[in-house]
Image (cartoon, rainbow, N blue to C red; front, side, top):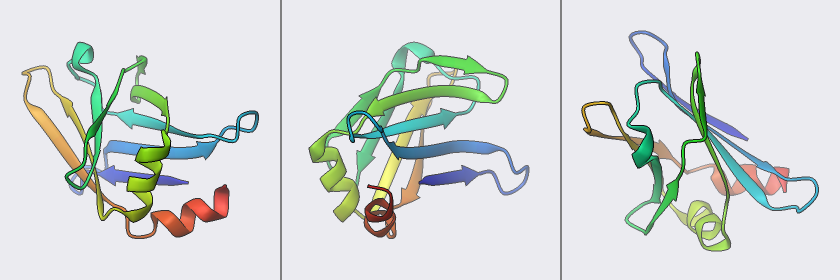
Length: 115
């Protein structure tokens, strides 16, 4: 399953989240595509509603963006299923934090179809 946040003026992808089930372990894995121009050492963060944040290390960048992936722990999965909003945050080169809100309204139903 996938969700995408784009800039309306340019159509540029700001955040793309892909969640899949690993065939060997049957665990959910999140893959994030983030824009270029990030403060890489800081990485990215995921937060559901006002819950605790999950830190992600940015693994690689190429001309379409930067990428991070992580297995989704049981507590984060439960929060995603019951939450209203996922916030993806990262820093730009000027060390300003950018937070992108993504709605979770259909997450549980979509996840049930892929698991």
